[in-house]
Image (cartoon, rainbow, N blue to C red):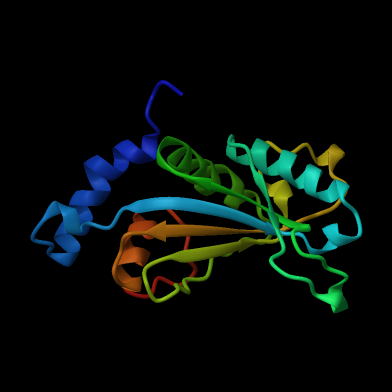
Length: 185
């Protein structure tokens, strides 16, 4: 991990000046940046089988290169046989170098491996952040398909410093995320 990620250099050299020109910012501090990427797997089925959490932690750790942690329930829900502090998911938060490396692998390797891929939806949260839902963890090359016991999806949230959805969309589009229908180009 001695060399900096290609996307980080690309951001400094190409993306930031392009965004500055596109939105006519007065200061470089106004240019939106990617703050963090949060990968989350909700595993409600883990209530019945505890080993699923361990498998998910190992898989997410392999995908991201950073140790994943189990998330626990906040309260008891009798209908779902759920007790407080029971592990029901796995998550990892990536920042700095690892974040850029993961984004590069996601855009250049993982997303093109999705069957019948036509692009991702461009629905933002209203504050310039974007969440991408992935149905199968097997699109990542780090996962050995032979050792898979269950297909599990995940949510990947891109947290940006953008003030509006339009700025967040422009930033992520410049990073190479393949949005379906270009809405404001």
